[in-house]
Length: 269
Image 1 (cartoon, rainbow, N blue to C red):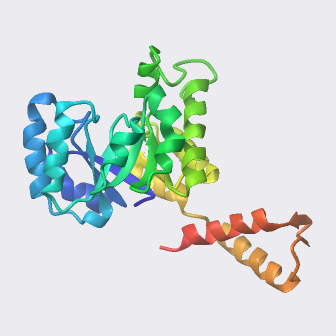
Image 2 (cartoon, one colour; image 1 turned 90 degrees about the horizontal axis):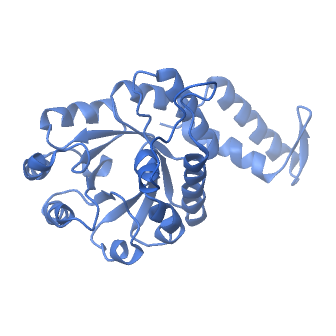
């Protein structure tokens, strides 16, 4: 699913179809976006939802809550089989969810430290990280700098957690999903962060507002110049027939060719 994922509060069923039309995949949210008194109705809305299960996942509440048991019971009755587990950290409990494809949302200190083990589970298909819950779990107050020349940029602990999750997912061959960009009016900041996500290896990025989807898609879509350059490089590699060769004044080896193949993969609808 991806590259542009869009959260849709499950207590707002009128938004489901619009979210699907405007994104590459929808995350029906039973957790933070839904008030406690609306969660029961949100589950009913999810059960009546007719979105494509291939491009829809359901975010459930943290597994140590009563709501999570009600969420899982509801999802079992639905057509959806991909769930995003909020505040994931307990490897044994998540391993027991064998009826589902699980996206482990690592958004606490314990979750980030457990990410390498979570990524190795057979039923885990992807990992995502969350910045604000992570910092809150540490007793902090903000994941990003609020002023000065670093305004809007992540603090060191958030950057570290982001890298840790990406490495854990990559080592296990699982999808890594970059966190949301909360300031949905700052599209320039989102574009910069999305471009970094692509270059670093995140397979998708989550969003909270439809206006963010186009920005994320643009970041993941290689330019025509990049596509042509990748094709020329791979053609030159075929012609060279050697492990290492010179091309346009640069020495090219296996990793550079992998970058080119990845560019062509992202250019394919």
